[in-house]
Figure (cartoon, one colour):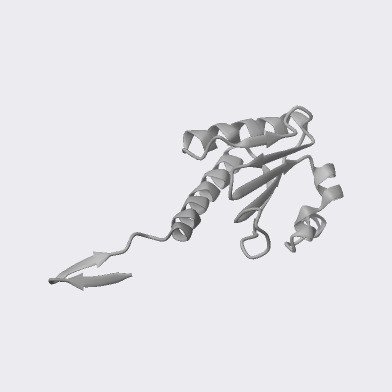
Amino acid sequence: MNRSVGGATLRAPPSASLLAASASGEALKTVLASLEDANAEDTVTIDIQNKSALGDYMVVASGRSHRHVGAIAGRLVTDLKAAGFGPVRVEGLRHGDWVLIDAGDLIVHIFRPEVREFYNLEKMWSADSYSERRALA
């Protein structure tokens, strides 16, 4: 909101929701760049802003093996912290089948392909399912 006082334009500070949206958008860019650098496969971004209070975005990606899933997750956590979005909460890193990274308004799931197909989060959140995308590739 702007208003003029004595010829000068005063601007209201941005609302908290605009600042949060900007921060989650920047965090999403960091996540997608990190996943690409770590050679994550089949990355899907799901906008959950109007579907859930869990966050603004959910990102689902795959690694080729337990080790690859762990390496992707480790790099992502490091990149998020370096960009100022830490601390983040991590679950499942030890097993490497499914790692969940909670970065506040952004939730990242990194799966081995078989586990991803079994849980099929994309279908649950109304994105194209993993199986459908694989069939089209």
